[in-house]
Amino acid sequence: MRSYLNRDLMTGALIFGLGLAATLYAQSSYQLGTFRTPGPGLFPTLVSSLLTLVGVGLLLQALLAPVPETLPQFETRPFVLVMVAVAAFAVIFPYLGYALAVFALSLISSFADDQMKLTRKLVLAAVVTGIAVLLFRGILGVRLPVFGMGGF
Image (cartoon, rainbow, N blue to C red; front, side):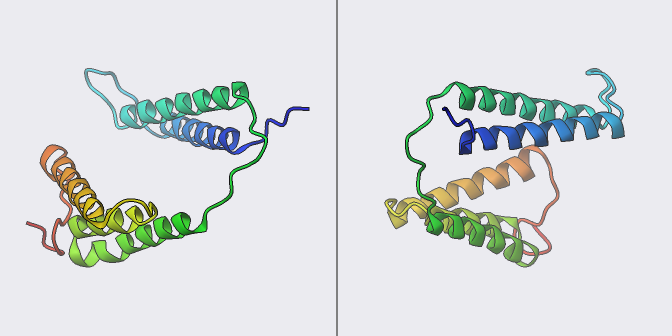
């Protein structure tokens, strides 16, 4: 008998459920408006609806894909490093700003891949930091402190 209960199915169900819950919340709590005059609920509804569709796609893929004979082993090291990276971001951000927090997040989480060289990890962290600063500060105009509490 084929077991449909696997990690891909659970991931699809989780993303579908979160997307659907967010869509229903946005629809019931905020006005949608129109595309010409968008209300506060239009963007959250669109994003959460797309998340719901991604969840449906993942569910279908999990149901139609062949089930592997053995389950992959859980790797503790990458999981712990990503959790430490998120905690480091939370600790660093209020004191040193989001540029250094994003750099630390990217650098620490890159150590989950033990085959990447240190120079590539540093370059990756620098590029991700540059993209984050450009996106949030330059394009979106979000007023977060880039360096320290005062920002620049």
